[in-house]
Image (tube, rainbow over all chains, first blue to last red; front, side, top):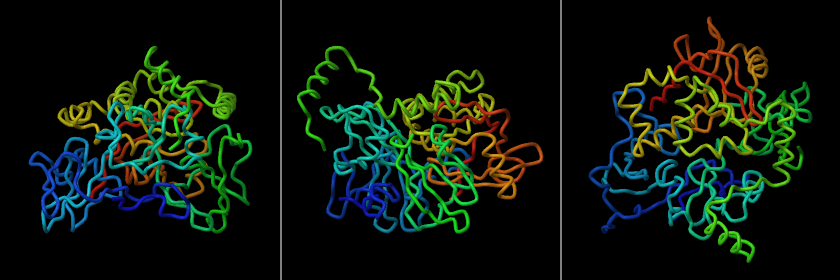
Length: 215
Length: 191
């Protein structure tokens, strides 16, 4: 069952929210009220070493009083602190989502925006799929993950909304700089395969520009 | 999902017989790459530029281990804040071993994503942007949280204060990205 994903938003397909899957992860026996995390699943927070908490970045599994989060064998488990049962799970980039692995069967509806297939993709032998902030090339026949073709910020952009945090500085790729450069009347910012035109006075997004056709 | 065509099946058969083929760029992608090469003056992609830098060999190795070669060698545009080999050497040994292990790969990806910023940010862009915004700016990363960059007493730094990772030298330009060497790993967030 899909928890929520980018297609729930008006700007279509952009991954703004978690693709958590509700239910029991593959390989875990389901009991009446869900499933228990395996004994070797380890917590992702609470380490003393400053460099041991790297999992904490993606916002969809930030620290939450209701849930504990545990990692085991490529999957992150969301564990209800009250029942101690797994309530949702997430295949992680670098874990279950890694080249050579078979695409997780629960992720059967994560096709990407056709524009992204055209922008990042290049090979008709592959399906291009989105999960955990990345676009993957997946072999159509074997369902094997062949590689990560793009990493995405997942930042939400839509016409009329404010420039997201993190775009203070001009960052347009070189091949588009002769057309899209900052001036007193317009700023341009690149994000996840698009260029956005910004009103410098209000910092509102004024226009979305698809690339490739405009190089 | 698109239905596999006869041509696709033939291609798959050819792959089986002759091994994995290298994906070809589309005409549009080739044109964009050629224009980028002309603008920057190099054909190197950001992964190759990283791999060719003698003091960034650990970062290059970790990027490869993370499966990000295609990502950084593709059409997307990225700016890397790349810890030098000396910066990685200062990590506790058990942490470095974890990042190099299969079990630690999700952590490695999380670490790397926080060092990769979206888009192409040349040094002049950084300086101009920092001047306009009062000496500090926020950069969107692939890791879910922006990083802050600011001008300190001894150059540009990531994070707050004067003790964070410093940008140590001129950036490396490639056709699809820019690499800034930094002297520490960007620390993970606190919950």
